[in-house]
Amino acid sequence: MRAVVQRVSRARVTVGGEITGEIGKGLLVLLGVSIRDTEKDALYLVDKTLNLRIFEDAEDKMNLSLLDIKGQLLVVSQFTLFGDATRGRRPSFIDAAPPERANHLYEAFVAEAGRQIDGVQTGRFQAMMNVELVNDGPVTILLDSEKTF
Image 1 (cartoon, helix red, strand yellow):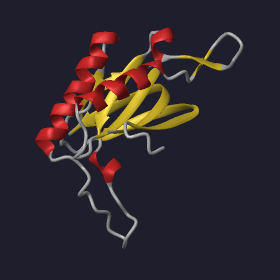
Image 2 (tube, rainbow, N blue to C red; image 1 turned 90 degrees about the vertical axis):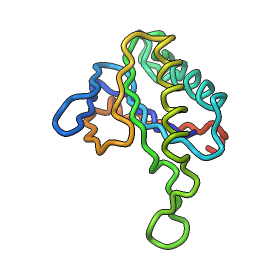
Image 3 (tube, rainbow, N blue to C red; image 1 turned 90 degrees about the horizontal axis):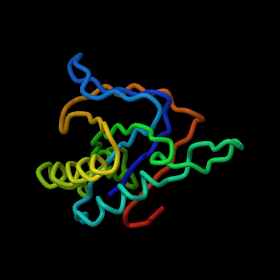
Image 4 (spheres, rainbow, N blue to C red; image 1 turned 30 degrees about the horizontal axis):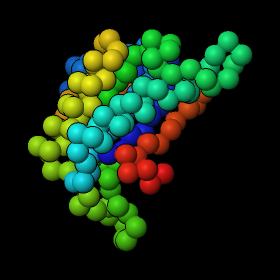
């Protein structure tokens, strides 16, 4: 499972002009699920994401987590995180989980995050979405449950 974690001052997702998720200060997570992922991967990434110390403390050092600041979380599914463009010019998505499996693990991630913080927001799985954000910093961190980076 892969996540692109962006520290934001605000973010929102719309589908067909309808806002499906919107947050203020917190994290926008673009989440991709691979064919090898399990619920263990989802739990690992939730823990890593919520405890990632990328918010400033009183001394302006990145030392606080989303849990510490009681920030908000917006989770957006993005199978293209498993696009492989090492050969040719058209990405291959053979490592991305099939939709039913990916949705199950995406929902597991969202549910576990929701048990730990209030007001988790989401996009809409398998929909064409518009994602708007103000990246604060900018701060962007890449996470992978297989720890490849």
